[in-house]
Amino acid sequence: SKAKLFDQNTEVKTTFKDVAGLEGAKEEVQEIVDFLKFPEKYTTLGGKIPKGALLVGPPGTGKTLLARAVAGEAKVPFFSLSGSDFVEMFVGVGASRVRDLFKQAKEKSPSIIFIDEIDAIGRARGKNAMSGSNDERENTLNQLLTEMDGFGTNANVIVIAATNRADILDKALMRAGRFDRQIFVDLPDIRERKEIFEVHLRPLKKAKDLDTDFLSKQTPGFSGADIANVCNEAALIAARNGKKAVDKQDFLDAVDRIIGGLEKKNKIIT
Ligand code: ATP
Image (cartoon, rainbow, N blue to C red; front, top):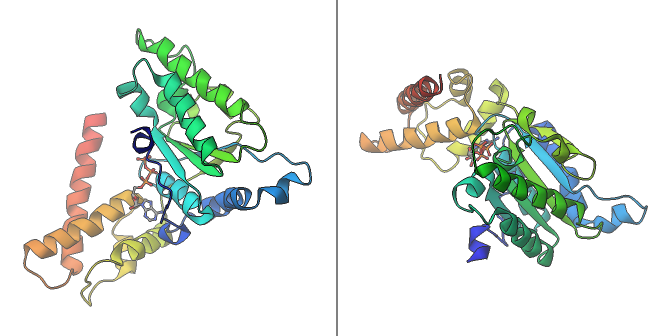
């Protein structure tokens, strides 16, 4: 069904406490939570509530998580789709998918629309030499711009988009009244990695020798997604070895394994 396609989740359970670190970004999106919860507070003074925000940052840093948490905090439905879906699944029907998505979100407003990998549809026009798909992508992008412009001030649907390539986006997307707010979501520093470890260690049976200061020192350059991966991998390694709790050595082995995976990935890219 369409509702499923857009992953509409009326009861988003994710909240800010699931998002470790990212203090600046959380502060900025707190404002969006407030717009969704108390729109009158802003509109009575004649202000227009922003329609869109763009989360910009490297892969796996928690952009999707943060967008879900906004919906969870505001207790509003979350409609999400990925820009790459348009390229892979919605060939020929991109514009009508966008129309459907906004229609559903308006019916359920206040609500959030989340568009991951917006660069897949929002690349600057005329820069894609690939034949055929270009017009299609432009139609989809134009429909998105039209929907955002046509919102009206009371629609109370906020569109959050994510990208790791803000530099290639069509400038029309960033115009006032569209994605005019950019929020940076960066790789975690050592203190933030410690917090992310704490979140992902919660469900594990932990051995006494586990130390999040040590783990955060061992993982420079890791994203939140990498850390979540390490925690899960460590638990699997411990289980495989018949242990009763996940210990430091399991984590060191898991870190090695993830680093191995990252190196492989980088090799493919270069
Ligand atoms: P992409 O650009 O690849 O779509 P993203 O920035 O949207 O990535 P998420 O999908 O939100 O990243 O992150 C993947 C997973 O990594 C999350 O579901 C969560 O388990 C973990 N994670 C990432 N960042 C954080 C964080 N700041 N705090 C806690 N967990 C995190």
